[in-house]
Image 1 (spheres, one colour):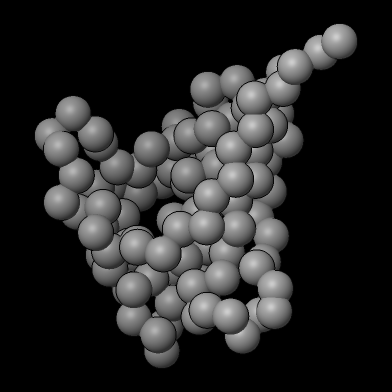
Image 2 (image 1 turned 30 degrees about the horizontal axis):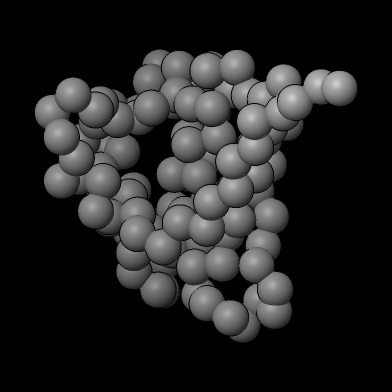
Length: 99
């Protein structure tokens, strides 16, 4: 029998990552570290908390979160949506699995 580690997360706060402990650096994934500096990343994360412009910014932060999981051995990583779609304006659901 094989066991899998699964992670499912429905993030609600995006802009709060700017108050992270100094041991955490952003972006988290190797993919984004080569593209965005920490200041630009924090600006995107703050935009994700504003309803008028949050969809693409939320996706950017969530793709970085999934990239971090991939960097740490998770193989199945995807963004889904909570249903019904109207349940919350921040309705992304992050799913990851590791053997």
